[in-house]
Each structure stands twice: as structure tokens, then as C-alpha cells.
Length: 426
Image (cartoon, rainbow, N blue to C red; front, top):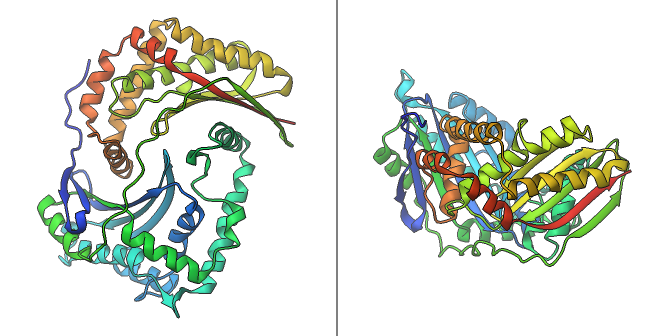
């Protein structure tokens, strides 16, 4: 049964230049969390876009190096700044974050939140510029770090196999691109050209601002509106949600690599997005298939057949993909592939035990409840749901999960289309 609860709710405002602001007022928090999401299509400029936050973090016009930034952050009771680059379907998202003590809990009563917002604004929109370019030293250092980050993706063979499966499965689609960029494109980026790209991106890319803390939403709206009160040209529209790609047959890709254990990855297309009537059934399908230790893949491929060192599945919800992956011995490829596909077929035929069904639903609902206390993740989740044109309502989602039937899960499994099988072996 669903327990009574009051999931966090965001109040939504629209600031000048049509910038969305979402505020969650929650007395649980002693700090204030701020996120600024800057969106763009996952286009040919994805490597430059990935490099930008790395260069921006090096300094602003007022605080021109990382040492000055650190000293100023310390004066704001050690507030933290962060940035990340993520892939959301066929969009690339740059997220900037601020974590700062709530001034209401300080004896001084100083306007700490406003100062933190101003620092975050400077970091994104007032970078250090010298002679019509970013500081060359900063750009070259961050190019080297980015190249190392991309090169190191191959070190985790589990994730590398997934990356390669995605590249093969989506070879003619923007989703093939990794959010960090491509090593082949890094060398051509220079300080002057990157600044030109930044000026276009920072003035035309859609931005959204989120704030969570023990705050007055109207007061936050006024403060954020004042700090981010600069003019921006008309925002460049994002591409539409990707349409489901029809699958004509299963592609098999095999690659040799020096690995201790082979990696088998299978990619499927489902075309279900947040807010879709089948969304909760898809979550249950994934949980029963390979999302947790009680799931069919773990129990049948790893525990019973002893074929896999690891066995899992997961869902990509914006592009519309589902993956199954196993770490196996090379000689067990055919048997492991067969048993993995049998587990999906069993779900399609309604072979779901009471234990699998109940454990999956309880685990998903527990994750749903845990999200209520993870405010950085909650802000990102709400934002992504709004990108899909939907409202995130954790309580309503729990109610829908309670009503999902085996028949709905089986029907959703029947819509999956096996696109690509990728095998990385020694």
C-alpha cells in the first residue's frame, strides 16, 4: 500500500528573456542548492561545448584564476561550485551548480545567497577574456585534461563496450556521440575560436534555473531575476524528441581487445518516454529483467548458469533504448546470449513470479521515495521531465506503479525491438 507522503513540489516562474525558474522550498535543508541548465542539440559542436565549462571554471573577469576563485568561495563560508556535461537523448546538457549555506542560519544576516548567485552568474556569463580570446594557457591545459578524460573511457571495459554498442546501434544518429566529445576534434580548437563559439552558445542556448532550500519562493524569484537580469536574444529552439527508429534486423558486431573478461551488450529500442502511458510498465519490465539482484538476468545468467561475472539491464528514457549487458568468458558467448534473450521472452509471455513482481515494485517505489531527499538529483529529474513536456509528480508515479499489471509489462516487452548485439572479446 502507498504510504501518505508529501513529495517535494517545485513552483515555476518565468523570468525576463523567458528564462524558466523552479523553486522548491523545503525545511529539511540547511544549505541552498542552485542549478543552471544550459541546453543544446547534440550536434557537431559537441566537443567544444564539452570543453567550455572546463575553461570557464578557471576564472572570471573579477576573479581571474582558480586561486582567486577559491579565496572568494572561502569568504562565502566555503560555498562550492561545480559543472557537468550530460547527454539527454539527442540533446547535450551543461549543468552548473552552487551549494551555499543558507544565510538564515548565520548570525551575521548577510546576503550570502545573492553573493553566491552573483558568483555563479560570473562563472557562466562573465569569463576571463584577453585580447579577444580565452586565456590560451587555460584552453590548452583543459584540452589536455579533456583528451585524457575521453581516452580513459576505454579503461572501464564494461562502459566502453556500452559506448561502442551505442556507436554501432546509432551510427547515423546524433545519439552516437559521447557527451564528452571526440579526441579527433580537440586539436583544432583554439582560444579565439572557442570564445566565438561561447558567445553564440551563452546568448542563444536555452537556460533553466533551479533553486532548492528553506527559502521563500517569491523572494528567490526576485533575487534570481535581479542577478540574472541580462538581455538575451531569442533562444535557439531544441530539436524535437527523437522519433522511434524502426529496426529491420539484428546487427552483430564483434571486436577484439585485450580484456580479462569479454563484454556482451545488447541494444533494444522501445520508444517510451516519461509521461507515456507505458512508462511505469517499462520501469517494472527493466526491474524484473535486470535492474536489481532479484532480477531474471542476475538470477538465471549469473547465479544458476554461472555464465556471467555481471548481468544487468537499464533503460535510456529520452532516446528510447534498453540495454542488457554481461561480463562473460569468450567461449560462453552463444549460451549467454541465448539465455539473456530467453529472459526477455519469458517476460513477454507473462512468466513473472510473485517474488519478482513484488520485489521490483517495492524497489522502484523505494528509489522514488529516496529521490525526495536527493535535491540535486530531484532538480535534474524535474527538469528532464519538463523537457518531455511533462510534470514530475512522485506521488502520482507511485500510484501508477501500484496499478501496473503483468499484462501491461508483457505488452511493453513485446514492443521492444532488438537492434544490435555487440561483443568485445580477447
